[in-house]
Length: 338
Ligand code: 13P
Ligand code: SF4
Image (cartoon, rainbow, N blue to C red; front, side):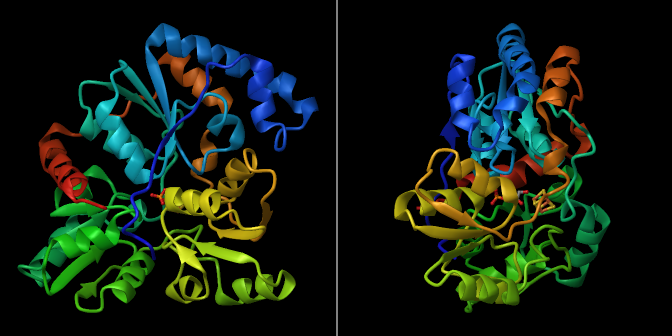
């Protein structure tokens, strides 16, 4: 896993005229469907000006969100870094709940909205604050690194956070012989493979999207497409990462593809990643398999528009734990990734 390369966020260009915006997504949105989407896009662009709002969108958002209305796109680390710098009054987070909560923690004076409160995450659901207190009691003195894909309550019980973009650097920064890395078991095992000198203890949480990939999937694709480049997200099982040519956060995957320009590539991750890169790189062929995240896919142009019209759903963090959760995220942001 090339975790020492810092992932980047990109500022998109949502102020273009509608025909130019359509050109950006025409490979993924059939012309017949555009008239149904264009009014929502126009309304969102207007509402962003009226509300003084920006849209932060995760790399797993569908192309019609990612390439038309998003102001900033990136992986979890980039979205956290960008949230700190937002000047606008309102942040709409086109992603999942823990990302909106992280933005609120890092920029508490802003109104943070998520278009659908049900946009959760199987990793965030896998562990509670009480579980973390139990681990702390069982392993006294062992630092606890918590993946950002968790609730603020879980972050508040942790020493610091990490993302898939900085996990190795975060663990190394502790200079500890033993580290608890929770709740993603596979991410922890993939980091362990990179830092054998540190003993990494973990938790049995999994991403429901990435846990389904198998080494047989990779071997099948290599048999069918000799020479194909395989890139796997580190939330995949270690046997899948071991069969891959590169592993990194979603932004690292994008950077790798755009820089190396493989002729054929498979992105072992959420399906919108390939669509979002393909929209701007027609010379690269993206091969399946990929899996959909049902939580990320709760976002739509329609509910982003409604969110800005009605200023819902506002994401807040319990003041009793906000300071401790913020400290864990801020400690992560202080770790240098290059
Ligand atoms: P990154 O974008 O940080 O790689 O995370 C992937 C993910 O699953 C977010 O939910
Ligand atoms: Fe959570 Fe996995 Fe969906 Fe990311 S892709 S939000 S880790 S379930």
